[in-house]
Length: 174
Image (cartoon, rainbow, N blue to C red; front, side, top):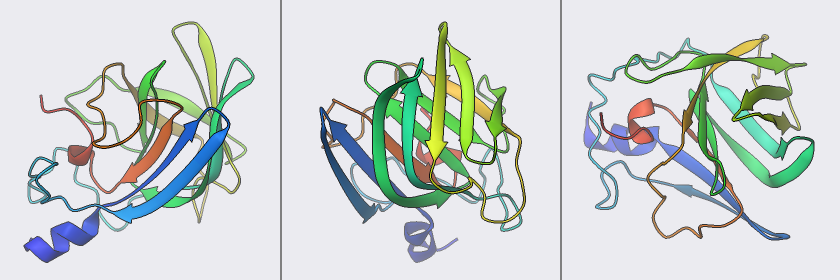
């Protein structure tokens, strides 16, 4: 795959909630930037194809035990989606698990909510529109990354969401 195609494969949306202030920035990220490691998409551990389900995030909020953790507007989509909170770490979701990490099945309710428990707390990621544009989805694979690498130049408060075309962009090297 040539360099230009690799650069356009990955678009990351990051919304950062700081207290009651919410800022959203949609920005293309280059896989070849000096801040990110080089990713070999010719040999990914989980090869996604155009026919695989793409997950979409439009205006979502995360609740823990029924209380709002943070919310983010905007839109992003990819085969792998995630949210991050400094208090809880990063939760990564996809229709295909990564073979080198510990993933478990979680429920998708009414096409609009991902529901799971972690460390005795009930999490709900609630979306304004269905998680998939066409069809239905009732289960996703989830991994809890308790100590993710921080995103460069981002505040370490509130929370963040994102999406990726490949696991290799977001999972730590094994």
